[in-house]
Image (cartoon, rainbow over all chains, first blue to last red; front, top):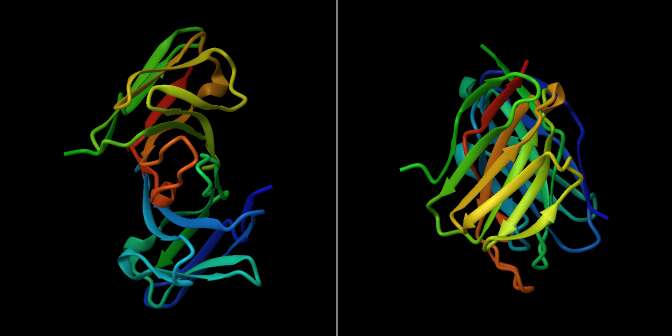
Length: 114
Length: 119
């Protein structure tokens, strides 16, 4: 069975400091993993995806995530937070065998203080 | 040019009414979805259509009826609206193919959402 757990419901950082949003997954198959961002009153936008190529994945807006199979983790990081990064972030696992099973984590709300 | 567009953006209605939300994608994707996002931001899939064929139908009351006239459109009709139906409904699409071939890593493109408020 597949599942995805975002370990923090809220994360608060100061502008210019690093961001770490944690995600653990469970999957019986080799998963595809994604991070999506949702700004207030907007739809979700893809930040980055992992599909069994390089384990360190670079996304948009300076975000990156590292796939660690031994830890079943896919944490999202950014070296320096910007005010515009304040949003809801979703970790997603997808079963990539032609099926359409996509499971969203509960989301992590990122607050950025000036 | 909006890739996935849904209308209306906001919908306020009384309990017991029937309403529809429309969705269109111009990406040429094979698969379309409806998701419901509750007040705690939790996203739950409701339906998925691949080339007009229903392929995912989660545990959703049968007051909700999706309709896909062609692969670029997926509409959602809701009968006898209840207070608990208040949520943001997101349409999405992806370039996947039914038939066992995995493609595109199931990247979803979302619409901007339709906020439904039932009074």
